[in-house]
Image 1 (cartoon, helix red, strand yellow):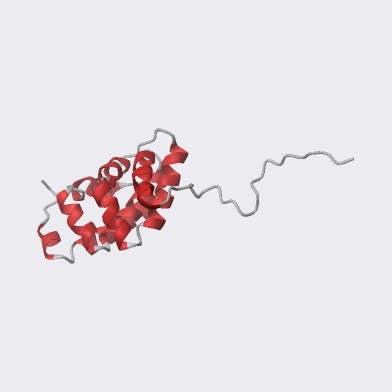
Image 2 (cartoon, helix red, strand yellow):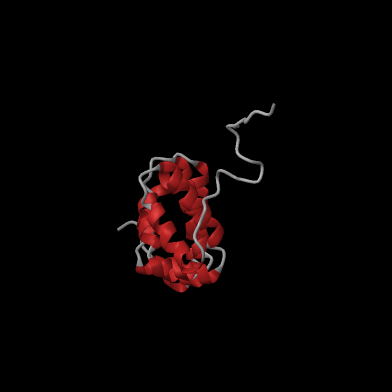
Length: 148
């Protein structure tokens, strides 16, 4: 006689680090809400999904328009190292797009980013330096004074 066996493991085709995301116009507003979620795993999954999506310039533009930068600026102060690492990685992806560079100027992202210069995580500092290097390549980025 056959018995039902329920395993604690996920099926082989399901990755627990990937978040289910909405399609089309609903994806970025949903991810923006999840970035502000108090549950750590939800924030981490939203950051992973956002990191994958923002390589597309159209989605990077949409993320700026939706207002994801405000939530991302808050996540720079998160106590979890993974959240800070993925947030700095997302900022690096955004700064590779021209819309992201100008959004940095409009949303005053450089000052909160510069507070991570003394972060205990090496990868956060490395991502931060890559962001600042990319940002300094535009004329408007050269005139930013971080010591204010």
